Every structure is written in structure tokens, then in C-alpha cells.
Length: 122
Image (cartoon, rainbow, N blue to C red; front, side, top):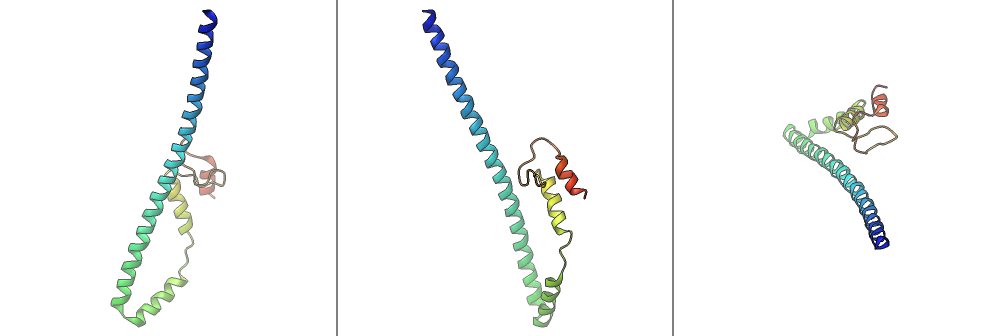
């Protein structure tokens, strides 16, 4: 009788360990899905902004005439995007993502990251 009870407790312990492993696997999968969802939401917002800016720029160029459109296109091509990359990285960090080379693109779950902050303050 004692042996049966001990065997039953061992089986229950093995089942609990298996459930803990499965719960940890599910937790990792959920974290990965949340990170991907956040990344896709941000990408979607950026694409909508670019599309909206492109549509309004085309409308302005069409209204201004062909000569003005050509000169505007040349100015746009020569425009420097220095600082825009830094602004995008700062925005990503503020939205909760790592921008450091150690965890780049992963969701920040434990507050500020010293690596990211050091990168931002270079």
C-alpha cells in the first residue's frame, strides 16, 4: 500500500514537471508572438505614413505643374537623411524595443537597457 502511494506521487510529480515544461514553451511562444505583433504594428504604421506622405506629395506635384515637379524631385533626392535613423532608433526604444547590438529588435520586458542607453547617448 505504501509503495502504491509512493508510485502515485512520483507519477503525479512527473506529470507536473511535464506541464511546467509545456507552460514554459507556451510562454516563450507567446512572447515571440507578442514581439512579432508589435513589430508588425509599427511597420504597418510606418507604411501608412509613407503611403499618406507619398499620395499627398504626388497631389501637390500634380497641382504645381511639370517643371516644378522635376525640381522638387531633384531636391528630394539630394535631401540628407542624417539624424532620421537616430530618431527612428530612439522612437523604437521608446516603444519598448531593444536597439543595442546585444538584443536588437527584442521587446524590452525589464525596464531600461544600459546597452541601448549607451548607444543612444553616443
